[in-house]
Image (cartoon, rainbow, N blue to C red; front, top):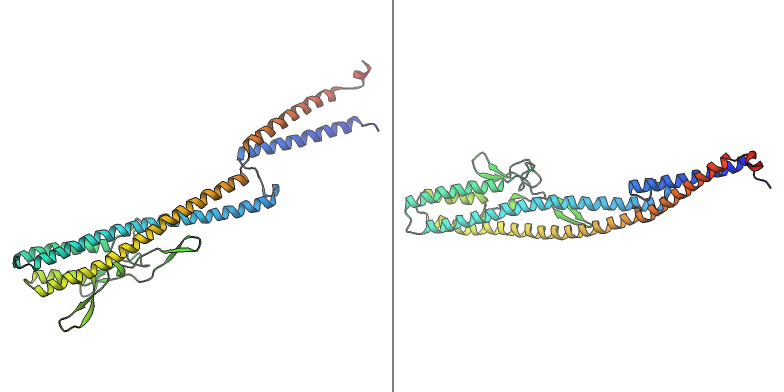
Length: 308
């Protein structure tokens, strides 16, 4: 059976079209660095890539949450350690004032420093983050943790609600802190044995008042004990924050390792093999050039070429 010139031309053009399409696809792969250009190229593989990208997005969310929580905890730790230092100084002043070598004027001078330290503690308790949120107000982040009530006493304005945030697979951590934990009430025992709860700042205000009123040895000794109790609450909060920071550091390492592994897997699934693709492109370019050259020569041939 003879093959007509028209059929021969059609086949040659079709073959060049296939080669050109293959070459164009390879060039697009190299340009995008991706082996799969559209889902229809490999449906099963595309679905797996989509699922893996979703998991990577989740891991990135954990990393972002860990970073923001680390910043919060770091700020909390700094404020609490400063608070502990101030309370230690207050205890030193109370012990110093209880010494009989200090007269009324000396105690009044100590009272001035106590009041200044009290204001410093209030500032620490009302610490705000970079977004202006109060870090010791529980979930009432827009409200100062401590403020004066109608009687002038400093009282806690926040709430006790503690929120949890996901920092990993099946791993949650408290994202905020209540001021009543670190700056909590202490138990005051009266002379008759009656016990009542006294606010953190009330302890300091009572100490300042005892110093201003002269020699009140009983009140000064009581202040030392109450400041010990107050510092215990601060110390426990520092320990809790430190424990949280350790958890976050550990989860950060886990998240980084997971991301590295997943991104490596994703790269193997979707990234083009440059060496193979370039080799394939050069091969197709040579094949296309050869086909075009042959087609050009054949298309110029006619009956007179055979007669010659």
